[in-house]
Length: 225
Image (cartoon, rainbow, N blue to C red; front, side, top):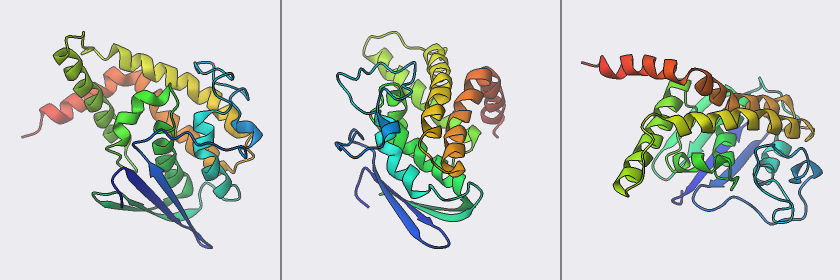
């Protein structure tokens, strides 16, 4: 597998579906065949800074429309075998379809070119599928604090208190509500709709209880012998 490409292989009962995700280049694609629900002005997220004069389609919608179409007839609880191939290693999971879609969708959205989700793109280079909430917390906060270290080295004011990270997840919570309405108009299956909810549910958990989650994580890290 080429560096920067992550391949998701879904093995369903009747077919195999493969997605190659480019993690290093902007994910926006040029096309005139996107569905109506992918247009930027169609239930545009309130937090979106893009203008229709500059961008005709929502970057996230164009990124995931093929995913939506691929599983339009499938149920969220359908069992599926998912293999994820990256340049360094492979992953495998036997799971509900919504779990597999959630993992892939998170990667697609973070690398879509969406200016709101741009802050999540750094983690895409170190993508780990099927993360638990604790693992996501560790990766998110660890990545953010590493960035603050370099901000300090460059003479900037680091955000060691995670205030900007908390603000970001508040924005993601609002984005969740708005983008979910767009997905509802895509005539997608409940597998895709549920995967969207699962993807943003993590942001809701983190924004409402980040300090509490970190307290639990502190006990885990500091009590290691």
